[in-house]
Picture (cartoon, rainbow, N blue to C red):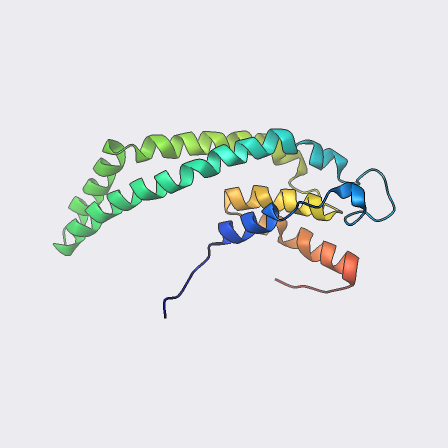
Length: 163
């Protein structure tokens, strides 16, 4: 039986993707017309396309990295550590990994600039937590949202969560 491993990025992205319930139906904020997370949610139209652009680069970035790592491992088989390191660096430069890595980081910097004012903000709604989870997934930084989710679970259902 093959084991299936799901990355934290995939889990957080999947969680964020399930938020199709409009805030206006009152699930996230019962009895109120305006979300307490309105300012956070207002950045979504700017933030989400940036995160999508960053995430779209990941498969190619991982493929190019693997090619460089394969070259390194081949040299390591000969116990030539310096040659392995040199091969890794040369392949990353030649195959475009370094360029795509820099492009990805530039896009992530753009996302950080958009989201930074809300980094320490604790969302009060499911939609707010999901937007923050989407951001965390792209940065592979689940710590950004863990306490927010625990707080929302406690607030809504009195469930204490310790990660």
